[in-house]
Amino acid sequence: MNNSYYIIRIQRYLNGELSRDEMYELEREALDDPLLQDAIDGYRLQRDVNHRQLSLLQRRLADRIEGQAKERNAFFFGWQRLGVAATACVLMVLVLVLLWMRNQPMQRTSEKEVQVELPVPEGSAGVRAVAASGAGLDAYPEGGWEAFNTYLGDKLIGTSPKGEAILSFDVDARGVPANIQADGHIDAALLSELQQLLVDGPKWAGTKGKVAITF
Image (cartoon, rainbow, N blue to C red; front, side, top):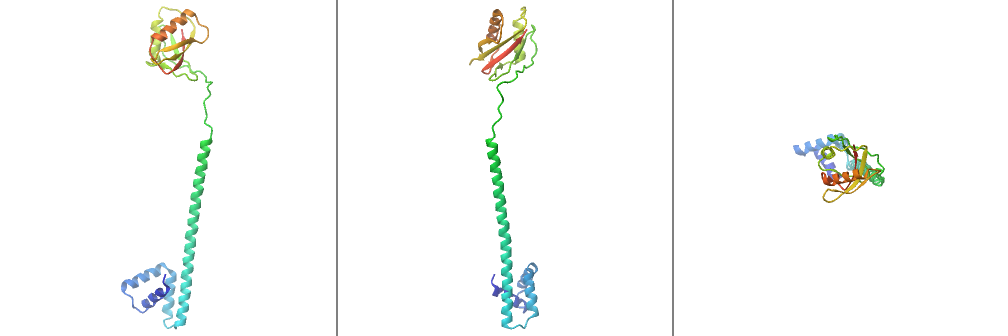
């Protein structure tokens, strides 16, 4: 701010030398700046001061204006630094949280799972086949378990096997069970018949399966 120009404006205002717009602008500034209003009131009360007194008033006014400017700058830059520091703290916390989450070991399901049988409708000859779950077992009949049970029931009508047979197998590229093996003891004739039924039966999806057939 040009202090000499500031004082001249006040003097011209008090002498009525400003235009109406200029007077209005100065009065509006005085409403927002108590220091300016004090200066106007002071000059109005001391219209006949000499040049030395006027210079003293100008110096005091300039000092007060400079002090207020420094206080405003200090306040602004203080809050600005606080804002930057707060932003940096938030970013640091986010980075630490992301690093912590990244380094946490992922929970893995144990391969030793309890086998769960999937309930399906019984076949027409009292045959009930269910999938035995386990690590790496993903095969299932493409037509669904209900259709597979119906197929076994129709093929085993007139036979009278008893008990349960658990068969594990691989599924080849054509969807046909291969390398069919029995888990546990099973009659050789029944095993051969079941192997043939699996090969001739519905196609399978997946790569490896295990089926429990109850008679």
